[in-house]
Every structure is written in structure tokens, then in C-alpha cells.
Amino acid sequence: MRGFLISRLAHALPAAWVILSVIFLLSRGLTNQPTEADGSLAGNLAVHVTTPTQNRLAEYALRKRRGLDLPLFYVSSRATPASGGVAWRWRWNGVHNQYHVWLCGLLRGDLGRSFRDNQPVTTLVSRALTCTLPLTIGAFITIAGAGWGLTLLLAHYRSIRPVVVTALHFLQTLPLFVVALLLLLLLANPDFLDWFPAYGLARPENSTTGLYQLLSSLYHSVLPLFSLVLVSLPSFVVQWHNALQQELKADYILTARAKGVRPSLVIRRHALRNALLPAITYLTDLLPALVAGAVVVELIFALPGMGRLIAESAAARDFPVVLSGVVLIALVRLLAQILADWLYYQADPRIKLEA
Image (cartoon, rainbow, N blue to C red; front, side, top):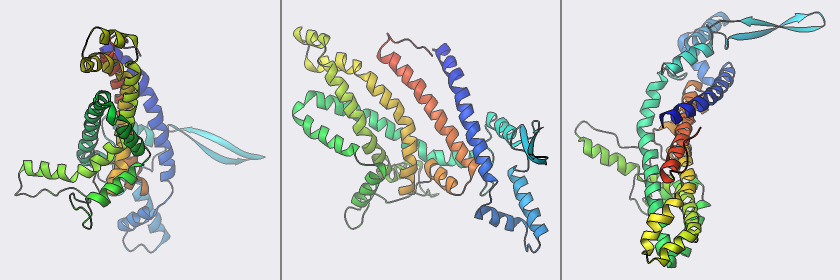
């Protein structure tokens, strides 16, 4: 297992590094274009700006604070006029460049500072993850448990199978924002059913206990969590159910039934485990999908999570925060792939852990 992990990381980390490097270089190229936020920040740095010189000094101070005064990469080119056209001259900038500073900080766990408020990106991300991690992990566990229960239910009770499968296919057609808005209108509407809060999280007070704060946070997370579950659960159950129905037609199942094994034991001990392989593929792809779905859910329910932070940072062109979100998504994708291989091996020991 250790050799498998090392080999898998050796293949995946270089690819992730190339993708992140390309995104960093493209985002820093866009950073050179001024925005309204840049103008307001520059105005705060230079009060009562009246001359173009003071404007340039304020802009330079802002760029220096962001680290944009350094060259972008190890090498740079400059177009110079020449006889008959334009000549490009290449220059070696050494390690004093934006990419090198960002890469060294990333290896140390330093994601830089936000362009908007100059706060450390690690502080913003860790604060947002306290909302996103419980939401996505809770949705993942709920989908896995409910998928297992519904699959067994459909296998044991054939009479309800057409109704349940039809309902699951109907839920598959609904996008996430529609499901979230329907839950919001049906269960958080004073004119209909005002059972759950419509947005935000509970604000902890000094007089409240830790248990009360936990229950209050869970109460506020019910609708966002069920939005993610209702969108992702149907595909998981339908895929696992179809694989299980194929396994129940296999010869070894007929042999077990001919020996007098109870139908419930045939399904649980024989067919269900062999039908796991297609479900594992979907289940591991579910982790990155839930992270992406958290963006929509956190915007609709006004949750201070990672998805909302990335969306607001992208709108404000706060690229250090956006890039940190890309780093986290890449790590989740890498962990999901490793988890899939490990689950394949647990479900079928005949599968070898190979890179």
C-alpha cells in the first residue's frame, strides 16, 4: 500500500503542479489590468491625490504590496524596434520573480495575501472550511448510507421498484439550484412551511453552550445538506441498482439460490459486493462534485463557506484566494482517485494496487 501511494503521488503531483502553474501565470497576467477595487485601494494609499505623479506613486505602492512589482517568471521578453520590424530580447530574471515567490510559499503552506483586504489567504480559507467541510462530508456520508439502504430496499421489495426508480429519474433531471430553491420556498417560507431558516448560520453567543451551538449549526445546515443529497443520490442509487440487477442474473447467484440460501443473504453476501465496483467509481467522483456544488448551495443559502468565498473572490478578481480554491479542488480530486483504487481493492482483492 505504501508503494502504491508513493507511485500514485509521483504521477499525480507533477500534473497538478503544471495545472496550478498555468492558472497562476494566467491569473497574474489578468491582474495587471486595473479594476474598481484597485482604484479605491490606491485612493486609500494616497489621500488627496491631485497630481498624476501621486497617482503613479499610489499605484506603485499598491503593486508592491501585492508583489506585482517583480517580474512574472524566471525569463521575460521585451519587444524593441529594429530595422525592418520588431526584435524580441529575452532576459533572465533569476529567482526574484512572482512565480518563484508563490511556489516557495505554496511549499511552505503560505498561500499569500488577499488582494481585497490584505488578510492571509490561509486564514480566509480555514475560516471558510469550517462551514464547507461539515456540509460536504455530511452530504457524502448521507448519500453513501441512503444509497446503500435504498439499493437493498429496491432489491427486496420489487413492488415499489417502479415508483421509486421513476422518482429517482425525475430528481436526476433537476439541477442543483432548482432543488435548493424549491426546498427554500417549501420549507423555509413563512407563507407555506416555516420549518427551517432561510439563510446563514447561527451566530454563537457567549452564554450558549457548545452543544447548543452544534445543534443550531446542524439545524441551519439541513436545507443546504439535503439540496446536495437530493441532487447526487439518484444517480448513485440508479447506478448501483442496475449493477445489482445484473449480478442477480449471474450463474453463481442461481447456484446459491438452488442450495437454499435465503434471498436476503444472497443479496448482501454475494451480489451486493460484486455490484460495488461501478458504485465506487461514482462515489469517489462524488467528492469533487460536492465541492463544486457547495458553490451554488452556499450562494443560495448565504453560507460563509469555501464555495461562496471562491465565487466572491472571482467576481472581485482576488486571484490569490481563487488559486487557493483551485489547489484544494485539485487535492480533493487526487485523494478521490487514491480512495477509489483502495476501495476497489477492498471490494475485490483480486484487483492489484498498481499505478
